[in-house]
Image (cartoon, rainbow, N blue to C red):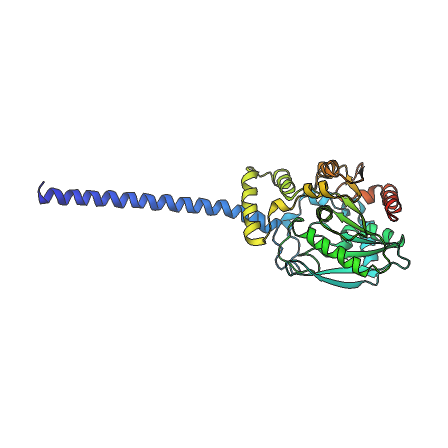
Length: 342
């Protein structure tokens, strides 16, 4: 081969190399761009559902005011009773209480002692909620019937520290710590009950699988979900009509583990329901489209402790106490009467 031919071959090979390199770069760039877009959509969902940074300065975003949240809130049909209940809570002589979580967060609660206390009731509110909101209508009834109340602020809510809501994965340990806080205040050895609504119900159910003070006589769970995975899956599919929910959950699991410091699999009631031996009173609204009533039915089925299930016809999410107050209050009173002395 002549020097001229070799030169042409080298030029040709170089041009092929440049073309292949450019194609590889374009392919890599497209792959990186596609992966970034894939992860970005998961990050947006993570930011919306889990992250709660600077929560005290933020108002609820308008784009999250979906029909599901509106029609499943007590304000939808019971605004007058709801607002009067909140006003009553704020008018009480409340005591600020604090504990430190297992991961170092300063957690806050309001304590409202009864004049002639017969029991303590720990009130565990729902997702991005507050004790004065979720328990607005029931708190007065409880207090006037011998219950000293502890309104806990879940991590990342109210006056409690935190940047992430963990759907019960870490809140269950916060509930456990608050239960021991009540036990230390319980000089007269009164019964203690853990009462949760929505995510707060899931948290108290999960906490029931851990070591608790002996004074804890029972659990009350209103509209609790069974697992974070199931609840997110329902919300993604039914609220946002998102496809490929499995891929979304994969990304969400990754972000929860890396950034929020918890595993989605730990936000699950199944293990606790099989282990718990304290009686459980389950409530759920039959028309709830925020947390599907099937969640409570599954929790009830899994529970191996003494249990009762109350499905309230016509009630939506956290509206059972409003829709049928006589039934709701009679079930609470009967539950206390049955287990106070045990």
